[in-house]
Image (tube, rainbow, N blue to C red; front, top):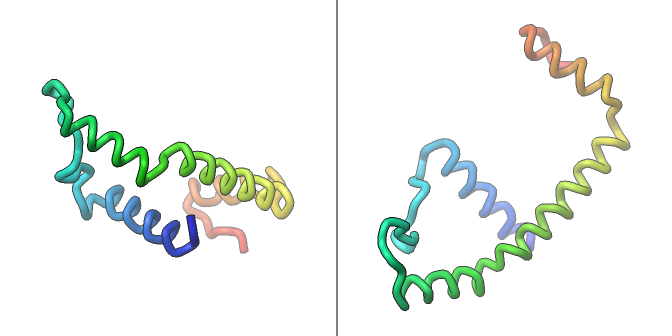
Length: 94
């Protein structure tokens, strides 16, 4: 996934979380009825086009890189102090 696609996906996910777009789409599968050839085709097309397993692998890689960067640049004390300050209404550490 290139950076443009990743940013577009992130914007779409933020819009869903913010309630700006519905969580379902026209091509969504109905779970209250039995599936026929049309639903099977939707699943097959989704797996072929979106490649969810590859997306999970990419997310794991990105999270591992984020964790490494956090561990290299911040101590647990830095993080806990910042979280504690925010909970108490204090200013964030610079």
